[in-house]
Length: 89
Image (cartoon, rainbow, N blue to C red; front, side, top):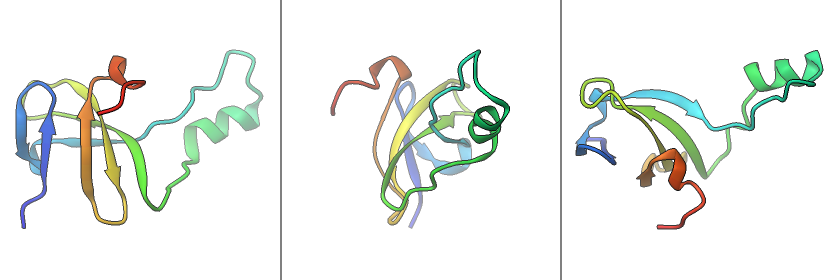
């Protein structure tokens, strides 16, 4: 079975064309302590289930987008641009 990711710009492509950018996190603010900054940089929730992740279409349009992926099944539920994050599918 081929792992396919639907780029919001180019459409469905094999996952080999993409680079994983990690799960999305809330940025540490300018007044963040060293501990908060370290948490932002090095620690992830690594949830079992749905999470929002960054992906780069490295071998295509070279654009970053977000994907909602179920980490238990590796199924991508939807892909979308960052400005569309608050919207539902």
